Length: 324
Image 1 (cartoon, rainbow, N blue to C red):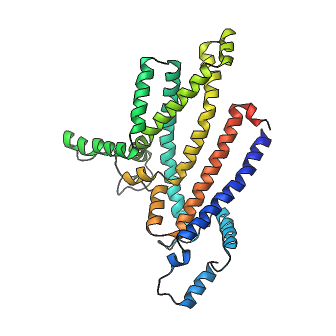
Image 2: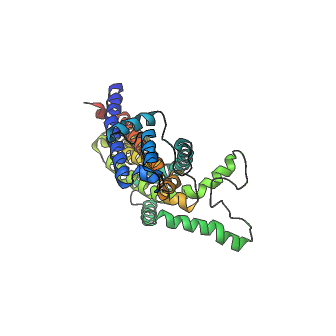
Image 3: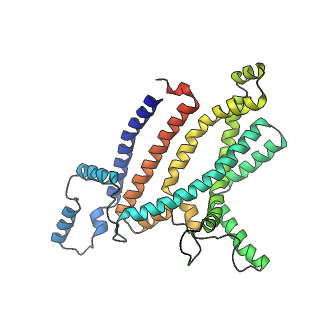
């Protein structure tokens, strides 16, 4: 198992390097960092000094490896917008997105997998038919539409029909205006609506994936053999079928969670949540090259790391995958 893990980690390094190189060159082709940083009326002498101070007069590969070395030390340069270090703002946005994503993932993975398992075990029952119908509704409902419905329901509708002066749940931000310090209850209240918005489609996807995977395993020959040996049905389902049914789900989960580092752009915009999505849009809107580059590098790192974790999960769930 250790050799398998080491091999997967080493194979992820060139993937990260290649991905970061493509992003590095792509951003530079779209927007010249010098043109983005300096005023158009700057003198030629000042321009040369700026290039020399930031190493922009060197070859592209020299700049790239310098950036990689700085990335390893969490040095992402200076923001062109705030004139401060990129990392503190990026770290705060990343932390906020991870909190929201973790809260939402706990909801949609738990609910989706549970519904999928029950639907497979009770195939063609009323529960299976209802779950299937609701899954199609969830898949066809864009998250931003569901988010707007939630805002209308707990905001405008609730206030107009109850006489309340405030929404039932907070509909923007991540803390009460004017509050100081950390309030766990207030933070959770602010997370509920964005998390539900993220969960509506994901629950449908996970339930369909899990139902299909469970049905494939429940009808497999090895489970018929287990039943013939007198093993209890509960043990057959949860000890054997459920564990093997999780294997194809790990790929989707790893990619899903890894991509979340890029920010939940639409959801964060709807609810005014200061995460990676807002960070990206602000950097893009202001042509903030260092911030865009930092955002891209963090996203690539997360995707690569979570794909490695998916491979390791495969090996833990199914030892046959460890074989060379």
